[in-house]
Every structure is written in C-alpha cells, then in structure tokens.
Image 1 (cartoon, helix red, strand yellow):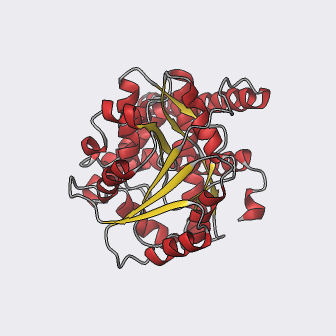
Image 2 (cartoon, helix red, strand yellow; image 1 turned 135 degrees about the vertical axis):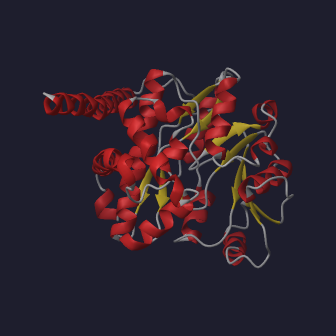
Length: 349
C-alpha cells in the first residue's frame, strides 16, 4: 500500500514540470503568432537620439566583431560609450581600433569608475550615465552582437509613455564545442521560455542583460544605478524596480546574438558555478529552487531564479535527484527553442 502511495505522489509531482512546459509552449506559440501577424503597435519611425553604454572588462570571443556590429546600425543619431576599470585592460586596444575604423561614429572610452558598490559593472554604468549625452539609454553586454535594425526595434516601444524599459531575447553563436552548446541550450530555456510565460501570466517585470534599455528619467525614479551597485543581478533589479513604479517592460521584436566562448564540458562544469556565485554548500538549496520552479510556473520571475541558476553544473544531495532530470529536459527543450528562434543556427555555429 505504501509503495503505491509513494508512486502516485511522485507521478503527481511529475505533472508539475509537464504543466510548466505546456504553458511555456502555449506562451511561445502566442508570442510568435502575434509577431508574425504584425500586431505590434510600436512605431518604427520613433528614433530619438540614443546613448549605448558598454561597461567592459577583458576580451570576449570575437570582441571586435561584436563591438563593430553596434557601429553599423541603421539609426540616425547615437553614440557608443565604453568604460573599463584599468587602462591596461586588453580590451582597450580593440576599442581604440574601433575608433580608428569608424571615425564618424561617436565612440568614447572612459577609464575608471567610482567605487560605489561591490559590482564593478554597475560602478561603470554609474559613470557612463553621467557621461551620456542622450536621454534614451541602451545597455548591452560585451559578448552581444546585433543586426542593423537593432536600435530601431529597441527604441520604438518608448513612443508609448507607459513603457519604462525594453529588453530582448538572445540567440546563440557557438564555436561548436560541447560545453558552449550545453550552456547555450540551457540558457535559452532559463531566459526565453520563462520570459514568455511571465509576459502572458503577469507581464514582464525584469530585463535581460543582453539589452537593458530605459531613459534617464525612469532611471532617476528608481534612484539610478547607484541603488543597484550592491545587487548581484542588476538586470533583474532594474526591470523589477521600474515595473514596480507602474511602467511596462516590453520585449523588442528582434533578438540579439550572444557569442559564447569555446569551452569543453569540463570547462563548462568548472566555470558555471563560479559565474553563478559558487559555494558548494549552496548546491542543495539551488537545486531545490530549480525543482520548485518546475512545479510552480512563473516562480522564477519573483527573485528565486537567481538562486536556482547557481550550481547549474551538476546535482548534489536529494534535492539534486529531483531537479537533475528536469534540468536536463530543460536543456533539451532549450536547444529546440534556439532552433525555433533561428532555424539556421546550427549551420552558422
């Protein structure tokens, strides 16, 4: 009798991830159907001047090509501002070459930032905001590559005064290594599917680091980046705080490219915990968070996902036994979702 009760309980729990995946599939279908039918009310002719802010450190794979894509945008007026902590940073020569190759593009490089908080990235953003000439701010990570219509898509929603921030999905450019492929496929589910489901159920209340766009006015209303200097997930906090003030966070139409480094499976397993704030004692808690997120759709959007993302490399303890299979399933679904976003992904990789 006890065995059958345990079996039935496990089966009931297993319905949670199934329901979650069904809901994300539903949300994805509705999103892409809406996009295909062209029901968006954004104005593509709304093109205010833009300041693109890039806090950078070190060299990402194909860094020059990533930066250069921002210099070839089909947009009337914008500037690109970089900030590094140290003038000896290896990325500095790359930015200087960019300035030489695109002399008519307003590219400025700043060295040093005020030590406001623990986050070097946010400290740099505080300086970049002060140096920016334009009201509309677009923040993008250094491993991001964009297409020519990127800035038009990101700026267009701000024609509606109710929009407080804009973010984008990302597609993956991978070098063919297994570790990078695993990382890219998992990220597709972690971010894209959760974002689409959140959009359907309660509206988006966060931004993604691939692109965070807002205005100086909206930023000032939440206390500026200074208030985020000691926060681990600045992208989530920015969108969440803007949404809390009654503004909408919108998804731009065209996703960007995320350029992943070449890495083996062992390298992926080593660097992922470090990137996610590490700490072996936290693995059980983190995987428990992952399990709960599979059981409760939308749970990730309320602050737990950042803990759930920690320790994504493996499973430890009883909680890992619950979360491990679901995580592997999410990674498989992630690869399918990447191909859904761009069928030629594998050919380009």
